[in-house]
Image 1 (cartoon, helix red, strand yellow):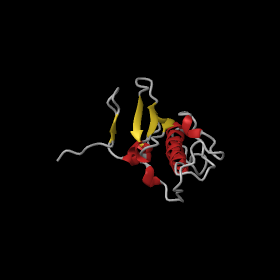
Image 2 (cartoon, one colour):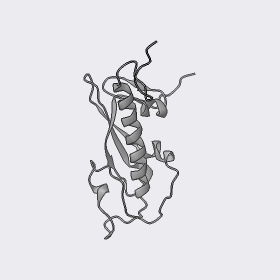
Image 3 (cartoon, helix red, strand yellow):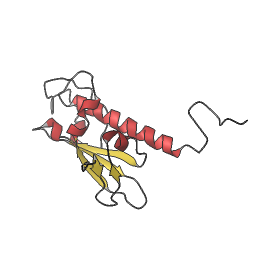
Length: 139
C-alpha cells in the first residue's frame, strides 16, 4: 500500500509523512498568509524550507491546519470595516487580529503554526547534551 505524504518539497524532495512531522521540522519557517475571501479554507499559508540547499517556499491551503484551533469563531466577515486592521491585505503580516471577524480565527491558527515551527527550530538549534531543565548532567 502506498502512503501519500503530507507534503513534499518541490525543490529538494524533502518529505514530511504527517502534519505533525512537518510542524516539528526546525528547518521550516512561516512567512505569510493570503486569504481567500470566497472560501476561507482555501487561503494559503506560505512556509519556507529554510535550508542552505533549498529555500523553496511551499504554499499550503489553510484547510490543512484549521483544526488546530479550538477557540471561538466569529461568523461575520469584517474586512474593510472600521474595526478591521487590514492584516489580511498584507501577506507578510502574521499578527493576531483584534476584530471579531470570521477570518480572525485563521490568524489564531497562524499563531499556532508559527509557534510550533519556531519551537521546532529552537529545539533543533540547542547544543547537544542540553535539555529544557538546565545544564547537562555530569556524573
